[in-house]
Length: 331
Image 1: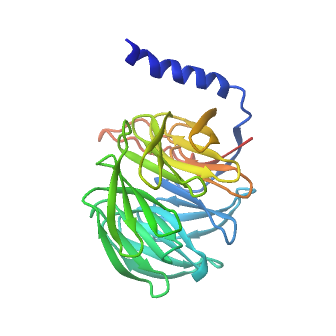
Image 2: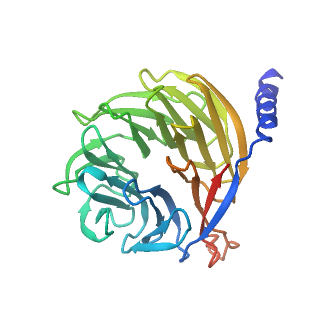
């Protein structure tokens, strides 16, 4: 009986304190087009929002929501990375098995790079000065030299990588979705050094890192976020979140962790200490709002979402026309 009641009581107590939070949806930005969406990112150069959206990337003014540009021909797009020292951005095109390169200041396309199969999450890794794609179908990482715009290494994983984060000191941490583990990859040798289990966490998707306190935050498919020590993989905390999480973010200045839950809410945890976390809000968003980014300057969280139509004869639920938008959550 205790095993059944304890998690429920824990969540109830934490949720009660969360009801006093001032976090709320403060703005909604309509976005043209009805394609599927995935990651959203804030450019550290232009401070604009880049939203992966069907066959293009929509670029918005983060303060007003006004559209300021589009990067086309990115079929099956998943995400955008910013290699600031090189003045270039990189976009992962899941259905093309390529990465689009663009100028960070003008958004003009500069080239296209063949990578692994179904490149999903993408990031710039500062220790190695490389761009990395997590390739879901080929179960590996493509390591790209931003200067030459060529793949210089491939890291086999024997599992499906969902997303990755860097400690900036030579290690990359990768969520292995179908193994419920985190792989630690050396950015010197481009090899997997070790793997860590996620305890009760299953099918990890979103991943964030606190490089000051050396903590990893893995959002899992079974309504849990697992906090780990980045040095040894020790599980620090197992935190309840909502269903359908696909994105986790950490605001270092505010010491706040966010989990975007596709069921229609945003879990907001405050980092009391490196080992203690308090749920301060469960913010209503919209069903399907499962990815996010946090703006380190304004501390606003942005989540893309669209409404779904009823399933058709093929059993698939399409996107309701004219409903794609970005939600801004702040306090």
